[in-house]
Amino acid sequence: MTEKQGICIVCEEAFTYEVKRGRQPKLCTSNECRSIHRKSTRKPATPVVRKQKCIGCDTIIVKHGRGQIKWCDTCRKEVVKKQNKQYRDANYKTVVRTQGNCVDCGCSLGVKTGRGNPKKRCLDCQKIRRRKQARDSAKRCYKDKVRSYKCATCKESFEQKGKGKLRKKCPTCLATTVQPEVVMSNEAKELWEAMQ
Image 1 (cartoon, helix red, strand yellow):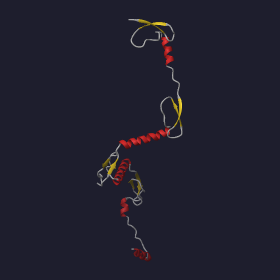
Image 2 (spheres, one colour; image 1 turned 30 degrees about the vertical axis):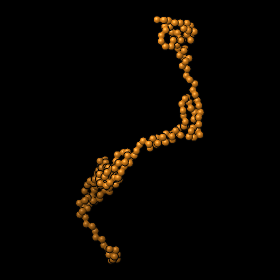
Image 3 (cartoon, helix red, strand yellow; image 1 turned 90 degrees about the vertical axis):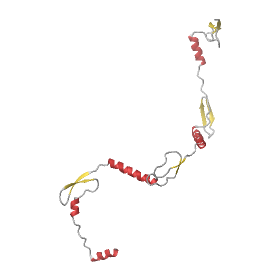
Image 4 (cartoon, one colour; image 1 turned 60 degrees about the vertical axis):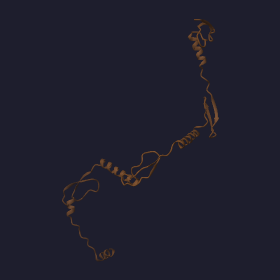
């Protein structure tokens, strides 16, 4: 084990150290010298502010720090869109599939291009199905409105379900009532016969 003497670069005092492989120490063993050296070497770099003209338009870009910025924000969006389109055109191929026949009416549905699930029904059958679904869901939520009315003929009270105009006569009285005969004049009869 060999020892050697060196001079500290901070406090400029002599110190002894053990000779080992690699770079020899330049600082003494005191913590103060180490902290001073660390603070002096690890100072934050001064921020670099640069100005550059955008490639796509005449706007001036202000750069903070290092790195390349060629386009402003608006031009960058357009460039990214263009690059994405070029990539899609080069790599993606449109999928062409036959969709088969309609489930309800059996007509041909033709060919589908692109991704997504193929159709099961044609446009007309789909509309019919949607309407049926809407009716069924409305029926589930619908409750019959029950109202009472008094018959004008027999003077008894009955119940009527559903919406609409309230009845004045019950169904039995309505069936038994005789419709009055329409009395027509001779001129009206002649007109009626001429029309037919």
